Length: 413
Image 1 (cartoon, rainbow, N blue to C red):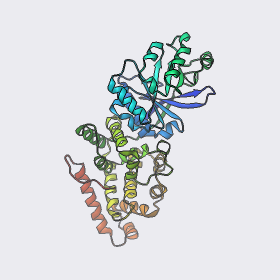
Image 2 (tube, one colour; image 1 turned 180 degrees about the vertical axis):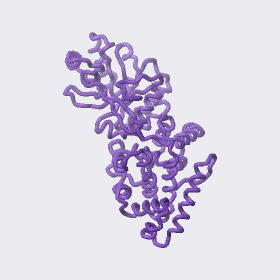
Image 3 (cartoon, rainbow, N blue to C red; image 1 turned 90 degrees about the horizontal axis):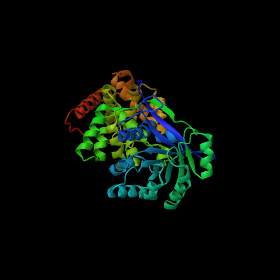
């Protein structure tokens, strides 16, 4: 698969030119900039790429990530897709917020999320700002602010929000940088510091069927989704399993160990973040139509659950089975794909080398697909007929589950 996804990234630095964080920018293609008609869709696009394509740690590392958004994002609750520890939400206050919006912003700040008051240039607007007392950062735009007012803009920001970091935005020259250092700005951003860098990578889209199922489920449940419904969809689609594992990365969630199963990943994400991630996937236009590989992964997952019934390895086995088709799905080496995911060595060893109980399990499943009686007799002597029947039943169950208005039960993790 040759499709790519793109993202812009521009650093923000301190007076010593050390990186504080990166502003993350929507890019729809390899061009240095992208014009878009719907800012909310662009924000969702950036979030989808950061959380579900790259993974936060691969985009910002140990630094902060900053994303432009309307206050409506917070009103809608979609900011909860992002961990509060690593992301800062940049909001423009072009018109006064209503009371409900202010309450939502206050709650988000109480929950640990950080805000940047963006695009400030007029003293009166800053003095009346409703967001400033909640903000951790304020950006003063040099190209539109009057130079004589800049010291007062900085003073008002620090008076109304003690501890706030004040950013000089659109620093375009050495003279701009020196002047801003003299004014006492804390942080600096602009073409003099660095132009936005274009990041690009192979796309890892979700299956079209699953994206549609998520969309329908959200629409039918007033944009809420229960974990059981998500489990049912996820265990039928390797691409969705891959994207949710991408969302669980060590720097974002403070993990000191990798995850061993999808149910553990869902537990770490929690129901609120799961709903938000499901909404990002559902609204993304980047999907893949490859029912053959997607359904093969679902059949393998159902077989894995049956082969490991009564053991503590079902969750890991289902995860291995789903991931085992992603190399064909994404046309990429499985080692490359596993390097993007926070999975255990047990899962890696099973998929790369066929080691351990899970490695034997996936080899048995592949042998069933190929009707390889010789391999089955080596791995599971005397069970080939039962295993062929098991695979046939799994395939039939998956086909029924994928049928319209299906009530077939999901694979339980």
